Length: 400
Ligand code: PLP
Ligand code: TYF
Image (cartoon, rainbow, N blue to C red; front, side, top):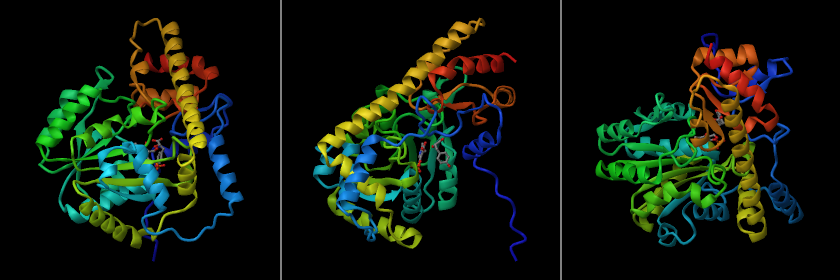
């Protein structure tokens, strides 16, 4: 009776890792998935995470079910990291926070909430965006459309287009924004542009919906990377924020994150939280405890907290170093006069190279550089030693 089931297409990002594994070429380089690697190109478990896990073992912490909303100490810590502990939204208890199954699960829970309480409301997503955003809204039954974001001519932000499309959307749309380090482009609005985006969203009675997957990982500073979200919260707006600890704490497989809804009263926050729990219960009952305890233990201990910040700066710093080296190497080798400065202007673990589909195929087929077809490369999968090789591959692919 299952004979009619057709083959599902592979995930365009995770499929790249499969192709990489299958390659036998010794020069192969995996710049597909956004996962941090050391300078030796190995996965990295943060020292501070190991310390927190040891502490948990020593204390003999149990593995009883968490409540539906997750670990209370985690929920408190995660909202405070995002908004700052002395933010009025925290002080006035105007945030409904529910622990989610990392960024993806938190986005999905929020999408289910939108579908239930704002039926027919549209989500607006950037063009391009992280591929899973479309899947999430499709599966939740939330209609979506795109707003202009990337301008191929400048390899920068199409700010005019973005503003025009947000303005043209039906009132009360949910505008999905990347809090920092836009995936896949690495292009973020300036503080001034964020203010203007907030202006149009307010004008149109839209609801901002932030996806924060890289707090602290983009610039190395937790506060700097939360500036966009805080700017909106300071205007007294209602907004949603999905958080992930996959990148900034390297907890990819622990599935730890949260959904935060900022409301105008603590009373509404209590009711919204109760409905988020109602949606979570039939989907997965309650979230996993391990990652939540790691985060709560690290943030709750001043020594561990500062160790985390140092390791995060180290990771962000390594990515900035390869970014610089790749730029230097491209400038030194390329004789065409092409302006490569966009590489230095981009933020976070990704660089959008502007390579088209045929050119990315040349990258993979001829040079064994595995990357997504949209021209994105993950600098987290690059080390200083391979920058020259990569720049040869990019120059060859551009001019072929
Ligand atoms: N949103 C964006 C923009 C991402 O890049 C990612 C992946 O890192 C996520 C959400 C969610 O990832 P996870 O489900 O591992 O937290
Ligand atoms: O964009 C990336 O590479 C990361 C990791 O289904 C990722 O966000 C990619 C695909 C996916 C889940 C996570």
